[in-house]
Image: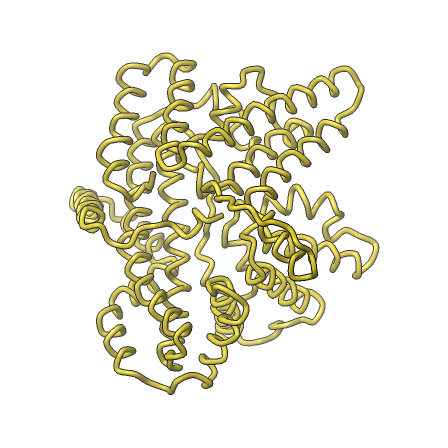
Length: 469
């Protein structure tokens, strides 16, 4: 079920809110059970069989958490249950996401394996990482073990962030499962945040997607011109930002409606002046997950030699690329960032440059990386990038002019709101608080919702990019 669907907006969400607040308002245990059931229904709406995979993950990781807690209390240690939890969760991820890719590689090397047709459960990387976070945080003393499997189930399956993040570490919400407090201020702020995310997705990302998809289709047909290549790459750069940050905004807003407070997942990444800064601002929950559970345990930057630090960076960025999908493009994408980060750290790349040059270089590198990320294969990525540098079907086409004229306002809006324009406007309005501004903001939010809803009802392009991961 999509957040940006009429079923969710006008049936599922209102129904869940009515039951949660009207019938179960003062009964926390029943609220938690209801949210768990609602979350399973939400996932099963589009994945009727794969919900069993998630339920298996819930039950098994609940058991691993108890095993870890027992090892801590009896002094028998936690290494075995933690190792088993890691192997179990990564095995599930491998079977569904990487088995066919691996067998294909082995067959090209001379093997003769039968490649099974395995469908990818939506959001499996997200809920698997959250399940693993539960066991690891219990082991690290960052959250109390849950004696009820229903509470573990609610943490792993809670529908706002279930299928496209942000990845919520257990330590962030461990106390909130039982002790959260719902307030009108949080609820109204959550509604506002949800509408912002909905507008990002429907009014910006979906419209920019039409240009990006056309550009990559032209590349496949060897009809892409230099101008359309740059236009398509730029549109995809903003499309994926508004797609994913829009989903995160909606998830954070929905969480607030039910009293949960999730950490931010984006912080205006396209204003970054280095690749290091970009990854502190982009998909923050994934970056911190790998930092806390992989990079730091390997020693991070506090190791005895430069070679070991580079090794740690290589492992993290190889895994980051692999996490995004079973395709060589994702692995190359992750290693591209690894190279850039090593050059920044040890080659002083960008250091001492004028600020505008630092920003422009960073934005261009990110743009090129998104081409690699979006392409179906390394061949298409290489062809698209070559076209951006003049080796395509010419410099200009009438189609470039047509698509630019039809979408320049959306692209301009995307560029404006990718910078901290909205916070600056909020700060300005806060200093001049008045009923006129308050009413104006409410009316603007209502307009965004109504226009977004009209696009949804018309059935325009809608899938979230990160559902594939």
